[in-house]
Amino acid sequence: MLRRCCCSLRFVWTNDRPDLAPLLRTLTRSNRSMSSQSGEAGPKPPVAEGNAEEVAEPRVDVASNLEAVRARVAAAAKKSGMPQPRLVAVSKTKPLQLVLDAYEAGQRVFGENYVQELVEKSNDPRVPEDIEWHFIGRLQSNKSNTLARVKNLKVVETVASEKLARTLNRAFAEHDAPLRVFMQVNTSGEENKGGVEPSDCAALAAFIANECDHLQLAGLMTIGMLNRSLKTDDTNEDFETLVSCRGRVAEAIGVDADALELSMGMSSDFEHAIEMGSTNVRVGSTIFGARHYPPKST
Image 1 (tube, rainbow, N blue to C red):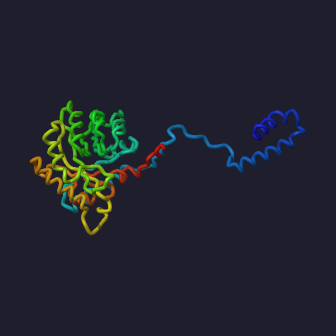
Image 2 (cartoon, helix red, strand yellow):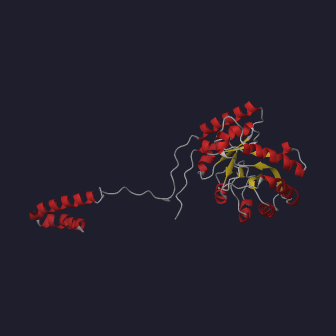
């Protein structure tokens, strides 16, 4: 109200009533003082257009990060005498431009955790034809048909139930080649992690091999407990459990154990996983930088 009065005085009385100029100056000073006390320190800066919940991505030198990760992967493989594993660059929540930056630096295999995000990225016309996608997130059965429409989807790494295997098998029935899948095993026993129990891995493998003509069981996957990888005087028993599961699965479906891949190891423990026989490591934040999630709606 006071600000409105000052505006009126400024535009009307200053011209018509010069005798009121001292009063105008007094009122203006008073108005400024009140604005300062109420936290209104002058005009507010303009608000940028766009989604208010989007988090600005800091600049990331993806090419340099990739080079460093590849060097570490190669060193770990050489140290353990193991073949160099596949590197899956986990790009979940990251903008497509960072995926394209990694592609320009020679990366071809990328991992995504969310079906809708994978659909949007894979359908973008900027995506090169030879990019390969791995789905590595928890998958609901009712998303199988959507996933089946993703171009260049090479592997689903998180099959953990007969129900999911059955729905994926139906969804990929029209594809020319079977979908390669990894069976996720919950080796750490943590409730917040998905996966079949180690004691049930052979039965699920047999179901996939015998009942799912449009799926190819290509390996096993786990998310190991990080604290077990950080121990310097011992091996990660979660990775040991996955190696043991692979042996039982191979026997159950009548294949050589080496024919089944081991997907284990992430940004914080991929070197240890390689030393224990991983053929597929999933590295995200070490390549693309820390993830910034939008605030959850209440």
